[in-house]
Image (cartoon, rainbow, N blue to C red; front, side):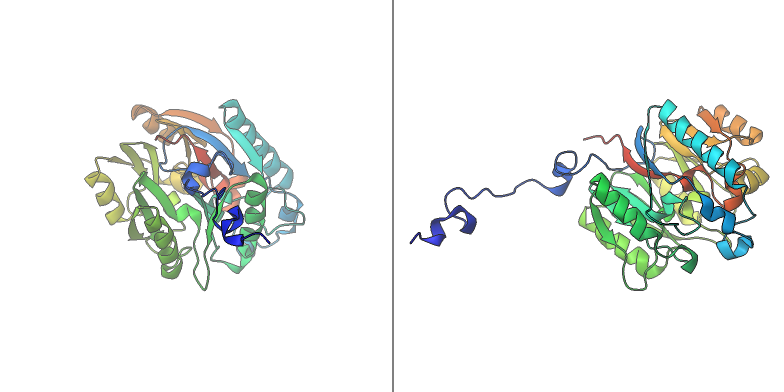
Length: 316
């Protein structure tokens, strides 16, 4: 009988040790994906086009929305958003749940936070959104993207509460949507990657960090005065990043003018219908692509909220 200790399966001749890291296997074993900065060229996004579930909304507050949506118009605007991404050379993947989903699934950004090694899965803070994370996890699995962590216990975390300052530093906010327990779990996973996390608290009456601060380039961020955490501005300035403040609060509040997606350094995709803010961005050297989403804004989110970022260009 063969000596099992000499068999390759037991470490004998022929044993082939796995020496590559997960990060090295992204793009080979796993689908190419990853983010380590908020401004590098955008390559792939994940969207969910809202459907008939919106017709069931009679009381917007119970759906955590601002108003009743016109379903056909909302879907048309979402189609235009996806088309605009494609026209900009960005691949678009769609969530296609097997059953009628929760009402807010369109806000994919809340459900994931992408790292260079894969996704940290969100766990939404509201019962209205409970279960959305399972649907996005199923989609990511089909796409071949690694899910590194699912926030557990009583932790809550929404991806729009985290942002990459640079490849070694993440800004992570706690508040209405991300609690301390969830933030601690996210921080632990990032720490394993050698990433420093700067925690900040959001003011009462704000939803996500995304709504108060966005990055247009390596050295340029845009913030909402009076709502952006003081510590966040200090952290950015300490790292050589200029912070500009929005000139028109009404456009930020009602037009989601700050809720943009950076598609390349100093190039953004923003909601149409915000002339003062768009002019302000242009004066700062930012190229603005626009798409109309005024019907979708009634659901209490903008282009950033609607967009799950799967891959940006990573610099070795």
